[in-house]
Length: 165
Image (tube, rainbow, N blue to C red; front, side, top):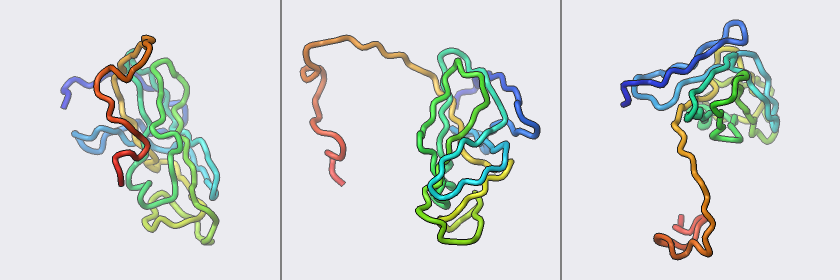
């Protein structure tokens, strides 16, 4: 583990917002929390505010990734996972959540703490852990045009499932 964490200035843009935090010392991702109650109906995609803005240092990005428990136990998905936050972004960090439920087959209102992966409407509550934030260094690439890339390195041939099931 790197003993020297990257310093990231943060400001709160909503009352009661919770700063991202690691649940355990050796975690790669910090939990991030909803800063507003949001209802997400089946098939809807909503932007869920976190209540904070940050100033990432140049040379870093932040990735918003799903929490495995939410992916396993609910129909909520982060459709652009991982979402990238660039170093120059200074607005409120938000999480795009999609309710992959096919229909509202239950009259019960479902919550992030749900454990049965049921279809229906999900109520995100202020303070719910909705995603995780991973801070990553960036390596810049520069393309150089060549006649063919086939002679460079080893061509493993195939893709999109070429290694089998």
